[in-house]
Length: 83
Image (tube, rainbow, N blue to C red; front, side):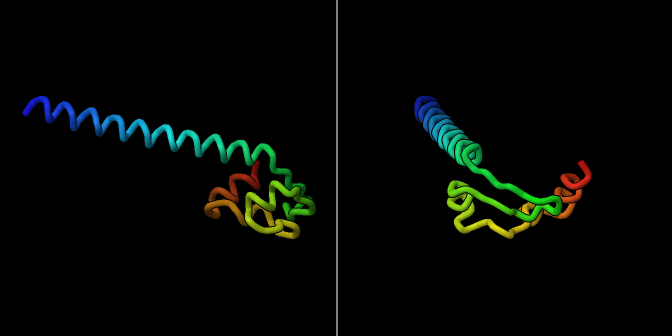
């Protein structure tokens, strides 16, 4: 029984590590995509220019969108605008 429990624990650890590795790869892919993304905004944070990488990342042209509309909530938006 002890060997079975150790085997299950090892399998669980390996699955957890594989999940963490996959998550880390996804994070790096997103960061790489963001680094290649260029958005130009005016003083009201309306997007006045975006490159092809930005359009691909957001899955649509970003021209005339408001950058601040993409924050997760109003508190995050307020914090950004007050900085």
